[in-house]
Length: 398
Image 1 (cartoon, rainbow, N blue to C red):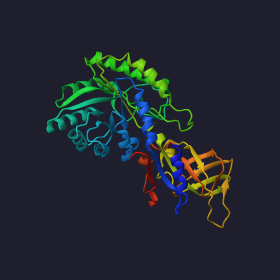
Image 2 (cartoon, rainbow, N blue to C red):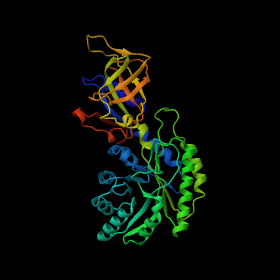
Image 3 (spheres, rainbow, N blue to C red):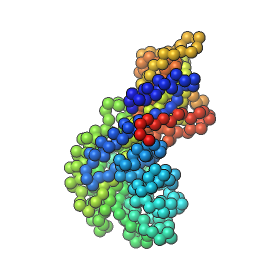
Image 4 (cartoon, rainbow, N blue to C red):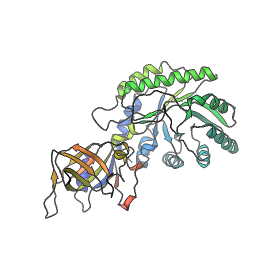
């Protein structure tokens, strides 16, 4: 749980007339966490925040002075980043950019575009030439792999991301020949939610060797290598998180093997930065038994917090007891038996945790889902059944 301030907030809301349903973010906790992470990076390594994880303005304002800049994947995210900080460095990625987005990105002075196909190279060239600007680009490459096991793989298999490694010679040749485009290096983002620091370091060593090989093959000297994000959060065991201290120790040794002309090594993490600062708190409306199984039905669900059903996991939560009980009816409860937490939607897929070992849970208690600061509200189908949206509360600096 993010901390005692969120506990106090939930206790206060539980006194009100409406069932508790809120997201709470501890911005001071966020700032402390990210400041410590960035401080451990070697000198040439820079941390950008991947806004897709959570683009709430208070989080962006908190992060802006702590990170090297923002990684955006849409015109909407670009506008949000510029609204928070007009001077921040911005990396623009995404597999299906429109002409308007490319033009807006160039006019907004983004630092670099991550280009994902030969056609996109031609489109960036044409738009940059028309605007009279030069676009610094990185070619995103879908490597052949193999890669460590992770929740989601973006490379090493057929996906919509990046240039197939087998076609890279053509893409590099075109990037070097086109007007209005300057090839600054390569972008390599191959997986998501990797939990092993050792495996991540091994993958970065593969990246190093591939890029050095491309430099020799194509006669290049890269200025920038973007090694992506993909560092994960362990939702199954909150006490066994990614070993950042061990990773950065290994990264400092690995950085010594990078050539000096790689002046910048970029990382673009999202989940790993912001997940822990957020909680999703929902009141239990009923506890019931059906065909031998126990269900806790909450005010909320996957229309607010889609991550558990999207990744098919049971999201961790703690129970915040509420002693008030306003009804003359018996108060239903469950204690020490497998329990499934479901929401208020008219679908059996509205599940936040399935058949988990649970402590005592009563109707009227509040379940606080931890590590809900990333890919929660942002990826959810908010208006399905037109239920009210959850309250959004930002604690600390704003």
